[in-house]
Length: 239
Image (cartoon, rainbow, N blue to C red; front, side, top):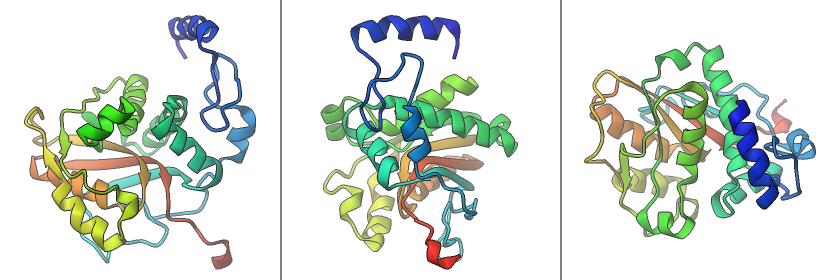
């Protein structure tokens, strides 16, 4: 963390004491998550398909438009608490914490230097008004600050606001996702570019896949996806 950022956080903490985005306990001004929650987060430690991002690889079952997909925790327990607080209570520290892990993971795989733009799965205007921000783009912005690659919301638009994704079946998600997103009229030229596409949670992969398809159709050469959490739990009984 840069010293200017530390000073800013110190003075902000005087007015608005810093809290853990997972358990809501008070933490130091220079901390992102409390030490207890860090140890209790359900980190993904098992191998998964780096292409589709799933333990039960779906590459042979569906056309995958994105090129790689990384995620870091399971969407359960403390992981789910952190995501819900990020969505509902502006727990942006959670996004910042995992942004650091994204940059490290991309750099270790030799992918970071290839990225031209960073964007995120869009939300509807209604959700944006309700929450005041798009949690996926908050994640993207923190990644952008760490690696000095431009992040922009002016790539994709979400038009379908009838149902939330979590209320749909897998088949409904896939069908609706390809109709729910369009290319923004403000999108820059994507010809030959590599795009980092961010989201908070990957469930079936339909949202990321639909967005990647649009970006590829607009000329993007590669789309690399990152999500904080993954709902695809690895069964310990399979060991």
